[in-house]
Every structure is written in C-alpha cells, then in structure tokens.
Image (cartoon, rainbow, N blue to C red; front, side, top):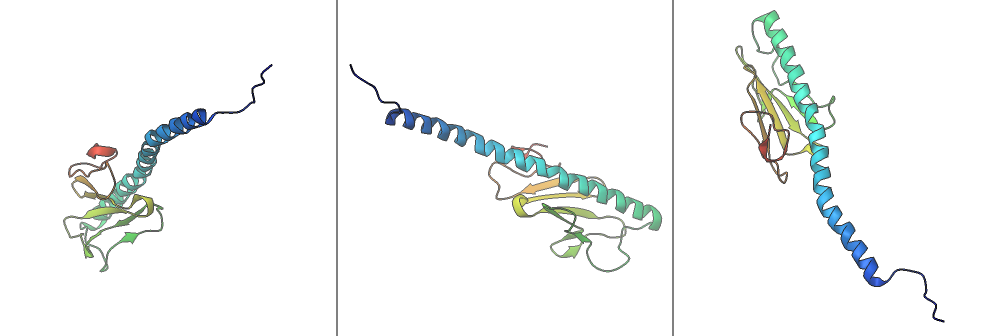
Amino acid sequence: MKTRSAGFTLIEIMIAIAVVAILAAVGLPSYRNYTLRGKIPEATGNLAAMRVKLEQFYQDNRTYAPATAGCVTDSTTSKYFDFTTCSGGAETRTATGYTLFAIGKASMAGFSYSVDQTNAKSSTVTGVSGWTGNGSCWVTRTGGEC
C-alpha cells in the first residue's frame, strides 16, 4: 500500500504566491488613492473656514489688508497641510482681495489648493502618479476630477 505524505507541492505554493501578487498589484494603488482622497477634506474645509474669517474681517474693517505686515500662516492645526495667505513669500491680501493657499506636506506633498475673495477655487498636483490639478475647482479624485 502506498502512503501519500501531507503537504503542498511546489506548484501549489507558486500558484498561491502568484495570486497574492496579482491581488497586491491591483489593491495597493487603489488603497493609496483612497487614503489620499480621505485627507483632501482637511484642506478644503480649512480653506473654507479661513475664507469665512476673512469675509468677517472685511465686514468689520472694509478691507482685506492685514493690520500688521507679514503673511498669515497656520501649520499647527493640520497634519497634512500648511495654510497661508502668501504666494512665493509675498502677501496676497490687499484692500480689495486675497488668495488663500493650502500647501500639502508629509504624505500630501505635491497637493496645493487655493481660493480667493470671489470663491474661485483652483488646485495643482505635482509628482503624484495619476493625479492632476484643475484650474477651476478643488481636485478630489485622480485625473483632475472635482
């Protein structure tokens, strides 16, 4: 009588490894995009809140211009974005307008969102595979979708 030993053959193990590799190749990029999309509302929500504060300031003072020189920058309230009123080191607030920026940091590096006093929104994305910016809205999905 022939006895068969228990265990897996090399072919069975190689097939299992190939299946896991295919699933990982499909799943990891989807998961990365999912996590990036989950961090974007932090930027858009804070920009909207900052815009409301500037509009309240304008109602009280009839100007958007700051009382003191220098940019308003907030990097402590957000894990993934820095918020500022500066572009290239220059203040964007004037008596009649402003532009607010959310600049990505850490895992969101490459993402940049902006809004101005007319509520014109724009976004740029650089160096993130599959993502592109959009000059007329805040990008929330790959391919420049808003």
